[in-house]
Length: 250
Image 1 (cartoon, rainbow, N blue to C red):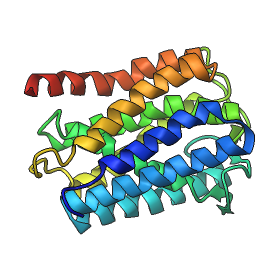
Image 2 (image 1 turned 120 degrees about the vertical axis):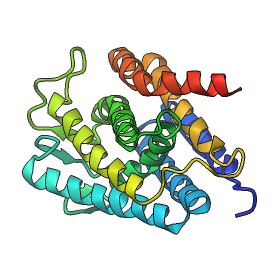
Image 3 (image 1 turned 30 degrees about the vertical axis):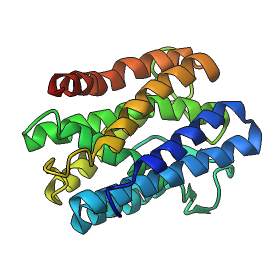
């Protein structure tokens, strides 16, 4: 891919997400699936182009296949996310898991990792920052998807204050799996930031866009102001230091 042409994919993703709150019903579900598909292609292609096949394979192996495995275990046993099940609105399922779900893990794992490698030289710190950022994104994701009826928990308590429907244990499960995922990426060599100038800019922009657009959408368009506040606070812990770092570099 010449000159890492990922800005076009990012623009397509942003446009799809802008359309999401304007749609309803099946159209909204289709936009959800399309967003994840574009994001998946963007992250995996970027990993391959900038870090090589080893990093891309690690991303797919751990986030896509590993994500599917942990979701299938979760649906079957209730561990580690709590007892939950998916509706049929997100497309075909295998072992009770919509096939789009592990692609979402992959889509957001890559920007979380690239953001973390800019904030620390320590592998342990990078893994911790990336895992926390990915788990914090779920503070936006799960309340939104539960409100849409795409999945539900059988016993969603205890929950974050003001966010019914999503148990606290779910976020701990996200954090635990995210640590394993980011550890695999660090071992596979995805930690280098010595890439051609600007090569990572679309993915870093994706990370910032995800944060800002999620706060705005929850607060204004989706009627979820409490998850907007919680997400702004928790994901902000990962995002705001990166913003300061980017400004300092300039």
